[in-house]
Image 1: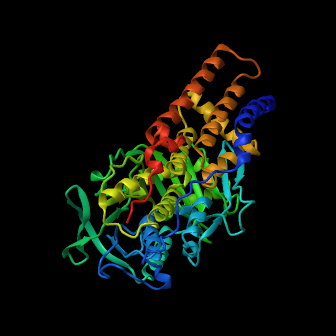
Image 2: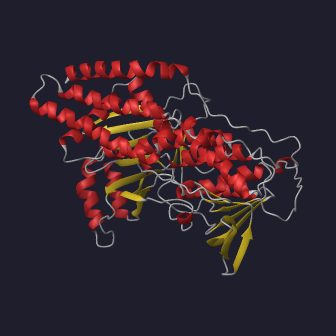
Image 3: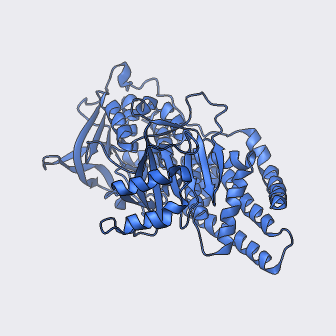
Length: 523
């Protein structure tokens, strides 16, 4: 085994260093978008007093949904002086079992948007990295935070508390209106979206008009059909429990157990609670009502839980309160539509294993803010639509890296009857255990601190080559050579379809896409 680690480390080292050394040394080249408002603009930040050149009763932007994307977007655009009308189906505190872990890259975007105080006073927990468990062994992967301020880290929290804090902050702006209502349709005229039709909380049917409608009504969106080509996949479901009176083996770290049949997640939820998410492959889960779920968790899952959490896990099952949620993935495939923009989970989803959804959403909001800042007039729907097509291209390198990592890692971390897939799983665990660039690179991708597509592909195939090196020792055999070939083939079969779905050119060569170079329309 020591020789396998040694040779595997040497081969992977040569591969990674030969292709990544210069890549890591240069640092990340950031896409820059103009952030200056034209001097002749009469649109001013609400924090410094409002000044409107147009009808003060008008609405600039309608936002459908006030979840993570909608509420953050409302505050961001409102702070820039836009008159925003947010329509949310239910303004009471949501209670969900996902959207509870914000990666450090997402926290940096939160700071950039001025929303970092929304993780204060909600018992949010600092997350400093991940611990991976397999067959009784574990390895700790710390986020590469050395070059960031001490406050920068991941955060985990009760989802609903975080949402309410952002809604409250958006509502403090006088030019942001939050209203509870259900949007039933988009109003279309001459091919352009002019606003929405909605029902108020008392059932009154109303219409609202604005030059731009941004739809971010979540994973169950009933409006995205006309704005994108939704290809929703459901690879698995989560069963959520809350563990009490226990401590994680590695404090302030997320924990991933490479269990059979698929991963189990643990992360701190508050000072006294730990969230457990048990992944169940497929679209159906054992019944909770007839006791099948309890039996499954106790007999199949519990024996694979780290000993420090076992008793608390059993207690949580006995206590009840188990909740389930389908895990969805959907590549972004928009129909550019004058007067409308699609964002958040309504637009793009990935498996929640890596906790990257909020990072993608907040990154998208920064882009949209910067694209809209130079514009004083949003009324030319056709020109605005053509300009905002650049959003779909500019977001690709970051969003596609996080999306691809989530999909690929879920498949690699799941058990399989295929020996080649299981070799890839073992190789991934050992590769991450090597430390140095072998762990720092992947965890930088996972954290959203360095989401570069090429780095993802190189590390993914470095894992595959490391797995081949394991199979070649002590001596190669026909069976091992065949397994090695299938391992490489399997790795390609995992990552390349995901990349194809994301768009190869947009992901790796965005500057070659014409929309990348769009300039703001003239006022």
